[in-house]
Amino acid sequence: MAKALSIELAPEIETRLDAEARALNLSTETVAERAIAAWLDGQSLKRIAIDNALDEAGDGAFISSERMNRWIDHWGEDEIDPPEPDVFLPAR
Image (tube, rainbow, N blue to C red; front, side, top):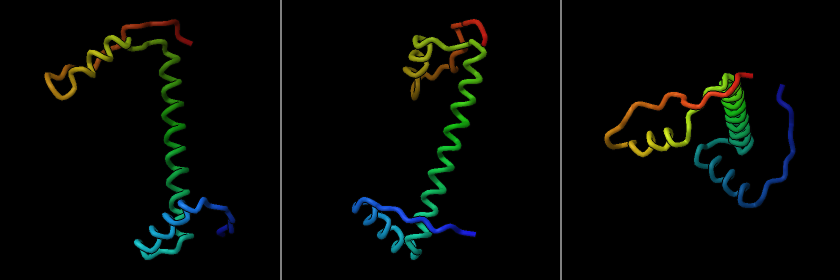
């Protein structure tokens, strides 16, 4: 069952919400609900990515900024393979 929620929006956000709802021929409530759901989905993906990165960092293998910058400098022209870890710290 849906729960009613009352929020105060800054005028510019309200204007954008109204315009988007009109453009999609949807209610402002539906657009707001979709926007909140999309934001929550993004936050979940961000949290998963951070957790995965922390797990990988716990392995103690890293790529130096020198190797990373060298790789990035070759993007788009004369590309090279991604660098392998070259800095090793004790695993956690």
